[in-house]
Each structure stands twice: as structure tokens, then as C-alpha cells.
Length: 198
Image 1: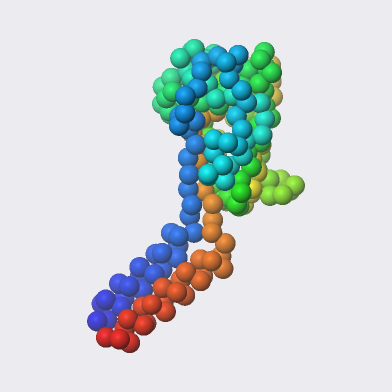
Image 2: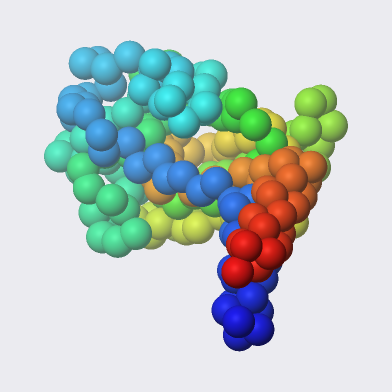
């Protein structure tokens, strides 16, 4: 009985520390996308509203069949689509990504030609942190933000280049602490209730 109680208590603690994580990935591969900017429109919230994510900007989801300049088809690129930018077609950062809940982790893979990309995190109107990476021709570079809380990410690019793309957006939301505590207390109550019955 003591061993079972210890096991159940350990499980309750594990639930507390794992239930506060809600992770998701957007790789833009869930729907058909054309290969050319002229055939596509800017990404909107209609595609990822179910994840609580809204895109605001001019980035367009394209298929890499057109061999988009500066972007490799090799991993970590997840075939066939990515979010693309090309100043010649009026599709250029910044691209804002709004989250319906508070996040504590975000990363993406960035590719492009001749420029520096920056992702900046905000909580309300207050900047929480930023990270930058230089574009390397035909190479994907991971950019990540962690250890902060935020509800908005802004992806922007500086430099002379005009061709950029992002793929594999990963983000994690933390359940508010009171909810996690309530779950833990409920688990303990159930644990001791079972023990009393036995």
C-alpha cells in the first residue's frame, strides 16, 4: 500500500510539471500552396486560428517547387511549403505573430539571401527579448527565444537582400500557475480519497 501511494504521489507531481506545457508546430504544409507570389495572397489567421495563432503581415505561403532563391530543400526544411518574403512582389517583413495565450518558448528556421533576420518577443507593448541571425545562402538557421513570457513575436529583416523564408515555427505555452496548482491539489485529494477507502 505504501509503495502504491508513493507511486501515485510521484505521478501527481509529474502531472503538475508536465501539464503546464502546451506545445505546437506550424510548418505550413497543411494545405496546397502555389509556387509563385503572383498566385498567392498573404497568410491570414484563417489557417491557424484553431491553434490560437494570427499572422499579420505580407508573408505568403509558397511551395518550394520554384527553387526559391537562397532557400535549401534540405532538412530542417519540411517539404513542401514555407512562409516566403520577396520585396519585388510587395511581400516583405515585418511579420507579426500573435498568440491567444502567453508563451514561454518560440523558435523557427530562417533562410534567405543577404540580410539579417531578427525575432523580437513582446508581452503587451513591452519588449521581452530578441535574437538575430545572418542569412547564409542556401542554409537554414534556427532562431530561438526561451526563458521569457510573451504573447507576440515580430519577425523582421534588415540588409540589402529581398528573398527570405521561415519554416517550422515551434512554440510552447505555460498554463497559468493557479490552474496547475489546482490540478495538483485535485490529484492529491483523489490520492488520499482512494487510500482512505482502502
